[in-house]
Image (cartoon, rainbow, N blue to C red; front, side, top):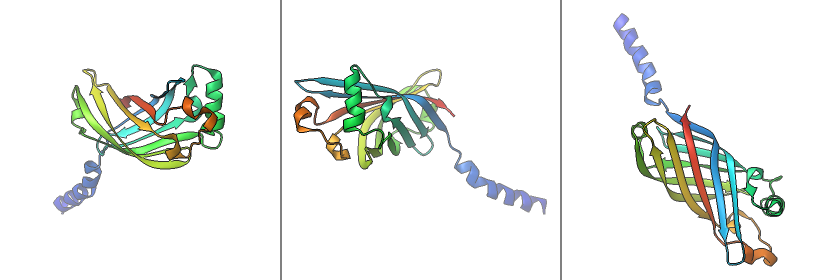
Length: 184
């Protein structure tokens, strides 16, 4: 009788053991974007990005507060928030997707791993599929740094660029993502 109770208990706990998750997070991730045209270069940084990455399943999410982007010129920041991103109406951008090309076991070993990041980027209230190459670097102390670069077309997310400044803003904006993760 005791053996059957132990067997039932073991079977009941088995799903919990198989779904054990290893999660990493940051609240100080870095997202930057760069627009380069012959007329003007525009660059902004946001170092207040929150992200969670479950290395067991590959699921990754991040949230970016739009007003946290910092520009070299205050007027650019004002136009970005009020005229283009409408950050009072659309206060954040989000990404939900998956990282492939690395396993939970590899995250425990020092090395550099090429990965693919694929999911849905929601910005300015419009969700669009996104896929990009990236890398994960695990150092000897177990610190995990992840990064990716991709391009975004403002009009794909319903962001209108007035004709008078259209030549000042690149048709494709380069986005750089850098996350220094810590184990949860």
